[in-house]
Image 1 (cartoon, one colour):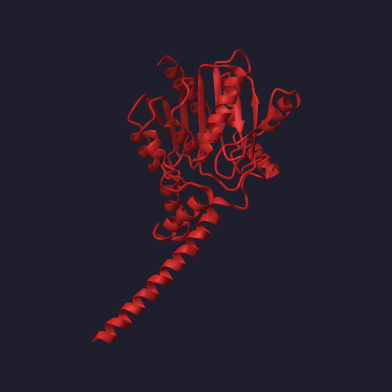
Image 2 (spheres, helix red, strand yellow):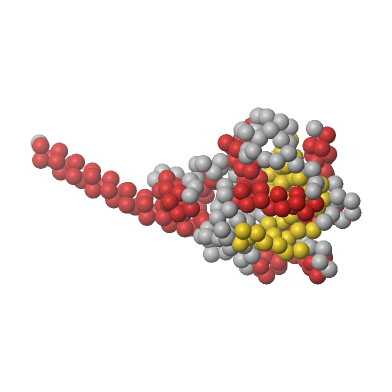
Length: 319
């Protein structure tokens, strides 16, 4: 009987060891898969073609202004020592404020020129448009999923304030940029950070990766995500659970507009309700874009999108 128990314990230990090893290997793969994608906003020509396909004529608008020196390129050294890139331009007419537009996962500053044009031409805002760490023309080690990006976006906003000296600045992000915006909103910020707009951002990196793991690989979070988070912490200095929009929103007391597509299944529409409820201090609004999939709210409803943003900013200025 004792021998049977010894064999059973030995077998159990071997199985546990094998599972731990499998989890570690799978976690390392998951970390590489998620944070070191082959495409990470570095295919500028491909993204130009994609953006032009969605918004015909927008590249002629941007390139023309860039050639005239209205849009200018600039760089800075990010929090971790890498050179980061952005473009910026003054408002078309007397400025109503300044907008920092933040792109999504594997995108770059080209991908949301629609919002840049909306702010500059329709709403008359100065615009600052960064390439996040490891995206576009910016250097970096890996995708930061918004958590460390929020520190860089703060510095871009501070640079914009130094250029235009506005007392009203809005940060507007889409997808990972939306998460970056929410994560930034809970920090202790200068008073000219007056408003935030999240378009289809996730509630936390852990929740988003758990959804992706189930959707793409039909796997539960444990043990792969736990292992991947440990790898990320060791390599890049942050873990998946600390990178939380929900925790940061709980500390945010400045106005925020939440936008999400009704049919978003990449960042599930359910996330916007979690995000909205997490913000318990200060003014907030929510708009669910009818029938829209991930990051398509503006594409599907440009007039309504612009008007929701316009009215929200008007309200934020009155507070």
